[in-house]
Length: 65
Image (cartoon, rainbow, N blue to C red; front, top):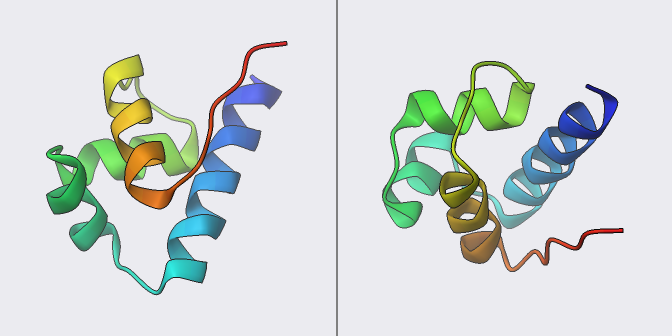
């Protein structure tokens, strides 16, 4: 679960650094605000596609180790 929380925290930080709201991010990524909240808090079960869409909007790169 730690990885999920870490990813969510990184996405939240990048969103805030970019100066956009959760609503703006949801619109730009083509997902719901509820899904953005789930990603940022590490709750629910957002799809990998949603996480990638949010990451793309924020200019983040997801890697697997």
